[in-house]
Amino acid sequence: MSKNRNSLSQLAYDHILDLIMTKQLCPGDRIAEVRIAEEFGISRTPVRTALRHLANQGLVDIAANRFATVSTYTPDTVRDIGMLRISLDSIAFKLAMLYGNHADFLRLYEIADKCRAGMEANDQFNRRTEDCNFHLELAKISHNKLLVKYHTELYLRMQFILLYHTDAVVNTKRHVEQHFEIVSALMNHDEALGLEILTDHLSSFYLLDQYFPRNFLYNLPSDLKL
Image 1 (tube, rainbow, N blue to C red):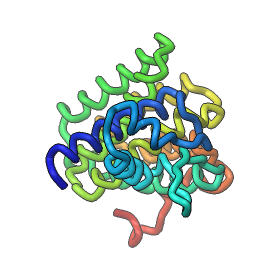
Image 2: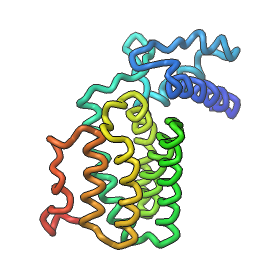
Image 3: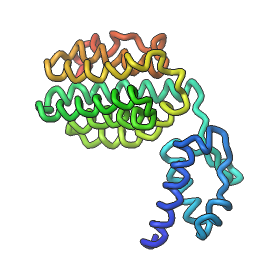
C-alpha cells in the first residue's frame, strides 16, 4: 500500500473513531461509507481499510453484505473482556512488582492523579483516557512485550465500555481511588493486597462478582502461580 493510501486510510480511521468516541455514532448505527468518502474527497477503498482496522479493534461490525455498524457489546461480551482484563492485569501486577522501580510507580501515581482530576472536573473523556492509560502503563512496567501487545489491543475496547456502559461502575469515585491503592500495594510489595484490590477494581466494573470470586487469583495453588 502506498504512503498516500496509508495516510488516507488513517484520515478515515481517525474520523470514524472520533465519531464513535464522541457519540456521534452509537452502538448499532450504520456507518455511512459513501458519505465519509465524499466528505474527504477520497475513494471508498481507504474508508473500507479504516473500517476493517476498527473491526479488528472491536469497535465496528462488518456485515456479510459489506455494510458496517458500530459494535454493540452484549453483557456476555463485556464479561469476556473483563475476565481477560483481570487475568492480564494480575500478571502485569506481579511482574511490575518484580521489575518495577520507584520511578515507575510514581508514573502510575501521576496517571492515577490525572484520572482523579478528570473525574473531579467532570471531564469524562480525560477520566476514561487516563483510566485506560493506568492499566496500559502497568503492563509496560511488567517489561513483558506480549502483555503490552494484548493491553494495547484491548485499549479501545476498554474505552468503548467506559463510554457506553456507564452503568457498569456503581461507584465511580471508589473505582478511581483504587488506582492509588494499587500503586501503594506495588510500592509496599504487598502482592496479596494488590491482587485483591485489582480483582475488586475490575470485577466490579465488568459485573463479574458472581462469576469471578475475589480470592480466585491470589489463592491459586502454588504450582499455578506466576
